[in-house]
Length: 112
DNA sequence: GTTCTCACA
DNA sequence: TGTGAGAA
Image (cartoon, rainbow, N blue to C red; front, side, top):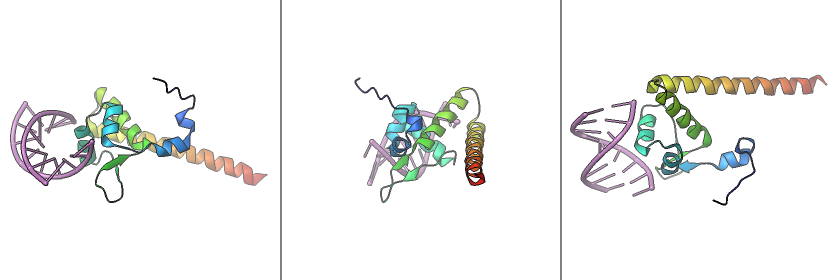
């Protein structure tokens, strides 16, 4: 217990992009059993990336986030489909907002 | 460690 | 909706 990162993962995009782990790690971190994760993926609720020639699933931080969010919603009583739908909508909305912010920023830049 | 499939609750 | 077990 000597790893005291003073960095904020949410602001370190390089770190975020390096956070691509196997299903075992994801299961370990999120507490969601590997079989559950595969089950969700089988249902089309989440997507994982197959790394190169291997068949093992790899998960980036977005997938992990998705798994965490869906798990929380399910624990709150939502069905799997409902939880997945909500998470999808939330992530899309967030993305849209940031795209608008990016456009606003570039517009102000061009305006000058 | 990972994958899949069949079966069961 | 999620798990157990067997096999590769």
